[in-house]
Image (cartoon, rainbow, N blue to C red):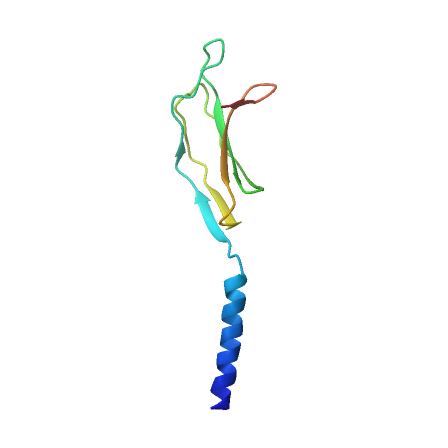
Length: 104
């Protein structure tokens, strides 16, 4: 009987430790599209691409599409250690020759 009692204490200690851990979850981002992106001041359609973060982890960016205000991106992003309190952030950018523009 003493052996089972000790096992219960170990199990209780492991359970208590596990309850204190903040488990990370894997997050996958895919099937991304946008619609109605604004043209620039000259009426040119944007060349949009996307940048993706989960918390402070930068996941990368998509390919850009020429002259498209309704793009669909094929890129997939994996965040294996995304915390449940982390924000998923997606930014849309316009690809330009010199400086890329952030689209709001």
